[in-house]
Length: 180
Image (cartoon, rainbow, N blue to C red):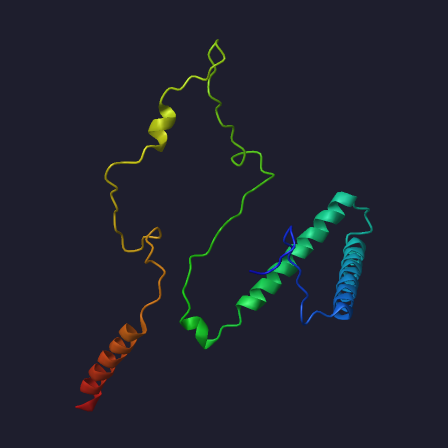
């Protein structure tokens, strides 16, 4: 239908792209990083002065820098999430996610996985344990508790109609109590 050169190419020229603005943004970012490093060095020198002028190794300096960086990122995240609005009352709630994995503790974090046993032929012996381990039960038994976190409806918001209905019932009860 249309003449299209082979191989087909995609060429897009953005309408609102400003290369000057991109250069300025990159320059601002560069100087912000430099300013952050200078502030970290100033804080580090204050820390060294308080510690009695002891010389700290480069590893300790790096550790202090990254600890400070994590603190600032956490503070930014906390300040961003603390600004609640009326829309937040109606958004879908989710369980908090905890994804901390200790890397440097030598006790429980690193566990060795037993390797399959090899026979003299060079083939791997399969005891059937793997099949039993991952076999699904025929009938899944779901025990419903009052606060079951694994339940998908656990953290869902209460519908607005139910809230309005409860408020109306409370209003009627208060009118009966204080009206007579």
